[in-house]
Length: 223
Image (cartoon, rainbow, N blue to C red; front, top):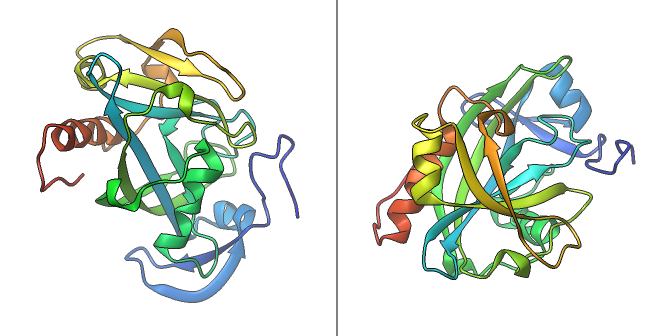
């Protein structure tokens, strides 16, 4: 097993190589080679949304671990991971407990669709993914989650009524609360656009709008 310095990922973890339209190729490669060669592969994103103690709808992000091979220390989906070779979508949901320490209620999961993502912003990395995107509805307090220090640096939650205009570019900062691995209390924080992964498809904004719509009772919601 070839681990990066901070155990953020196994560089030898095997992934299935797929085509850009999601068809299997029958080939399997290690993570590091997949990201070097720019092969298409499958990934999982689970976003946790719910209401805080004041009843406000919120969306939770993870701050990626410093040692991640892509976008270290930036805000990303609450749970993110890859399909190991041969895994089904249901099996990949193991990532939820591995990263944030809670076993999901399958009835609270809403599939939002498949996102096509290509990232060449970092030297030596060509990351091409088909991301299966889910929304996990969960009202528990931020302190009830148990973020894994080998996977992420913190969990951060933002009220949607402030987050959506921020992600739309109408404000320059947004206030939230954060908890680090092993922490027992959430602390307030103020963040700016540079803390988030930059995207051309305004991904975080689309997810935030979808979360708002689901939390207000809409049934047909996709990203």
